[in-house]
Image (cartoon, rainbow, N blue to C red; front, top):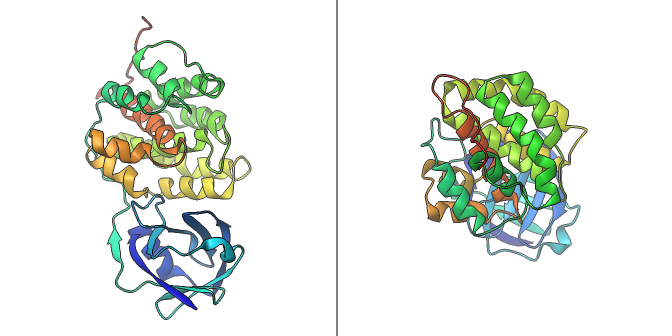
Amino acid sequence: METIRAVRLTAEAARRLRRARGGGRVVAVYARTVNLELDGAGWLSLHAPGPIPAPFGIACEPWPSPARLERAAAQVTAGTLVLDGHLGVRLDGALVSPSALPTPAPPPLVASCLALALTCTTTGLLPAAAALLTGGAPPPGPLARMALPGLADLYAGTARRDPEECLAAARSLLGLGPGLTPAGDDCLVGWLAGCRTASPAGRALAEAVGSRLLREAAGRTGRLSRAFLGAAVAGEVAEPVRDFMLAPDEGRLAGLLALGATSGADLLAGYLVARAALSSEGGAAPLPSSP
């Protein structure tokens, strides 16, 4: 059996491994990621070395050829995660990386973050957030145009600290867009994180909406996306996400934007919508005027 070692894992992954009982199974295999579910633990992701891109992720080295692991059985035994007898991942000695959202987190410079991010990508929902938060022109892409009314409603509901408004707006974003983690879902992960890191009122809003949002997601989006949403509801995020929220500077913004095709940018869109809406101490923050 080939053996590799876990170099780093998130605190959330460590907790899930401690809860694991019995077996599990690999769910999906990609060039640099293997997703699996363990009985009693839920979703875990094995990743190639580098920043850990999932809140329940484990960075491993050396990275194996994962093709033979498709649908492999999984089991944790004697400090090793064993996949179908073909691959053992040694867990002892791995460094644990924090995954809990910082509460509170420093406020990002919304306009600066948007301007920098839009020099890297103009796809996904980021242009819709830019149009909403800076009063700019309507976004050019069909996905962003489709999302803009829901984002505006989400902003308004957040500014009024109204869970019902926020949940109604979130419904229009759930499952919106292509891919394993659709843009609308990534945006909602960012929104939940933005609420939880902004203030006690924002945290209360995220807690009031979170469990209901997960129930809505059950029939609206896929398993991986629900796993990321569930982690955000519990206050857990991927390493590049947490790093940016702790220190929202240009370097960490680049790390966030590197997540997925547009996942990092879509998450940033939701995060900035929440932080901007909750930036007013006394109540509803008005939307910017159009030029």
